Length: 276
Ligand SMILES: [Zn+2]
Ligand SMILES: [Zn+2]
Image (cartoon, rainbow, N blue to C red; front, top):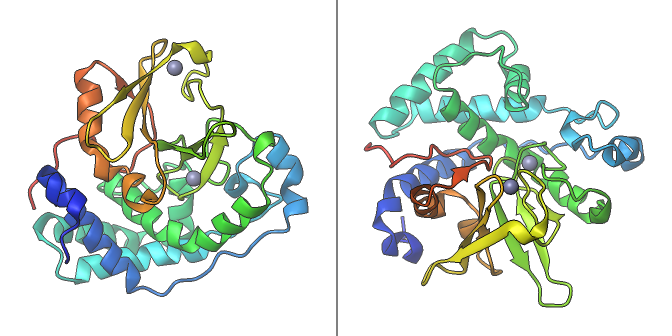
């Protein structure tokens, strides 16, 4: 694997970078099915009412093929040459899913909040299943981006899957500079108020930010009212890496040390990475 300069400069990120790369390699080896694009007119009323696309009965997006991709990804990681703990934990997940009737239907339910599946290592299942599901949903996310009226959403949760944002991004130049919130689950980016806290929706004056020297345009925006914070990428061109959440776990530690609370959605354990 070619060494990424960002990871080279942040050696403590190496275990999570390796995990992410191993999962991406396995995901690249499974068959991709594409989500069907719904008729947008059918979804419009739900959209205006604030119902995320995947929760909308009238849009009716079938997530079962994405669930099948998640099952295949876990099977591949369990059978492959993953490092110690990953092989053991994906092996236990694989065994659990084999015994669960309709696993490929129940995984999407689990991702959207149904707790009936009760897997071992639920955090790992969320991470792996969202990795597969995001690949399945990519054409849908792109199509939804192209037709969504951003001014009529402006909500604090993802218009596609309903998750809270993992991070934010500032784009463009003044006037017209925008803040996008970034979903760590399905990969959607959507527009939100330029200032203002997405966790308690307080007024804009109470947001403060901490800029970190030499951190590629990353900063921490935090709310003085609820003490929640959002890692923010003030730049463009490196979205895949700098909005991946894992690539800035050290900023979470920094925020934690300042007494701030992580209220953002995340697929990553907010703890020092474990050894493989
Ligand atoms: Zn989402
Ligand atoms: Zn707040």
